[in-house]
Amino acid sequence: MSINSAIVIGGGISGPVTATALHMAGIDVTVFEAYPGPAYGIGANLALAPNGVAALEIVGAADAVRALAVPASKSSMSVNGKRIDLPGLENIEPLRIIDRADLHQALHDTAVATGVRFEYNKRLTDVEEHAGGVTAIFADGSSATADVLIGADGIRSTVRTLVDPKAPGPTYLNMLGFGAYVDCDLDLEPERMTFAFGKRAYYLYWSMPDGRVAWGANLPSERYYSLTEARAVPVEQWLRQLREAYAGEDPGELLARSTTPEQLAVIGALNIMPPVPHWYRNRLVLTGDAIHAPSNTSGQGASLAIESGIELARCLRDIDDPAQAFATYEALRRPRVEGVAARVARMNQTKAAGPIARKAMQLMMPLMFKRMDPEKAFGHEQRFRIDWEATVRPATVNA
Picture 1 (spheres, rainbow, N blue to C red):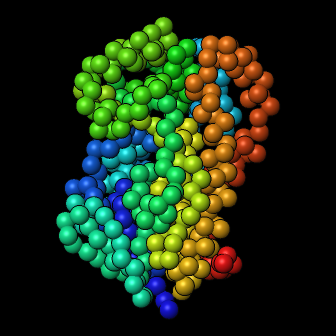
Picture 2: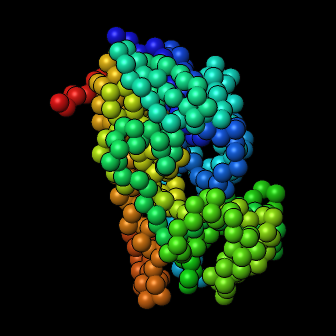
Picture 3: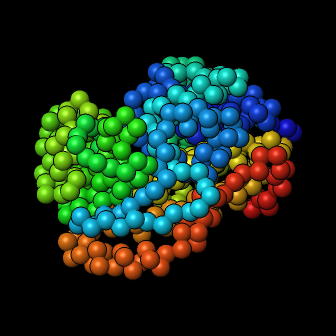
């Protein structure tokens, strides 16, 4: 019983990568996306770690992404205005920062060039499993059938609820995300990203090759705002809140005051995924943010999603039985993605640190980073590489 065809639900990041890898593996695949197109204006920018860019080499998208991205080879941390340069790994590709819409488009174009089919305005509502396959039912009344169905449909995954109706949903971090590219008189070192812990809110910033400054803000908020709800609020209102939050910060105040309503990208609630008990059921399986979405603090969210899609394709290429392929995929990926999530969970707490905790951070940081071994801290994450050519050995399927 070989796996010859696949349906991928979701055309964001993990969907096109998974589909491209499946096509490379000789599996007929179509991507179904609920939105009208491949780059539908969601989010601001994101970072791709060296391991994520290396994974994109496998599916032939790395050069296209590099051409659109800004390298960040150095990083610093600032607490209450005191900056400390962080040690980095040697002999490794820099972090790449890219607009989410640009990344979506590049991955879509790579997939299409490979031979992957896309269908848009296809919102999944249900699935029907039957002997030898699974049928996806869409809101417009259409359907599609294949040997397996892959849920790459993000943090609010429909497929996840079909795999397990009791599956946990995303956890709100009590922060809202914003981003902007601004024109301001700020002399910054090229390729250096600074993570700043202000008195009231966390932010980060870096220089752009064209002279602008990019920055992202995490605004504390007890109230949850979805993307739609956050964008329904007048942008001027969000700008007032940002300017109040970063008043007196250097350079946070300048960045907030330099941001115009037209420049501000409103992202809404920031979420993470808690551990998901069931990654698959019968012929349905999950990948990407649907099962693992660490905080943006990790710099690994998109990279892990890319890796998982490729590893899933390897398992379906080399293991004929869907259940065994899915179990092997989970065994390969769960320890890695949950390890990253655990590391970042501790870092998330510092974003909401109070004034006393921030003062302690300011005193402790120089000593902590002087002693930090970046190879031990991040080497295993960023130097990870997938061996596409290697044959996957089946893991034991639990009864």
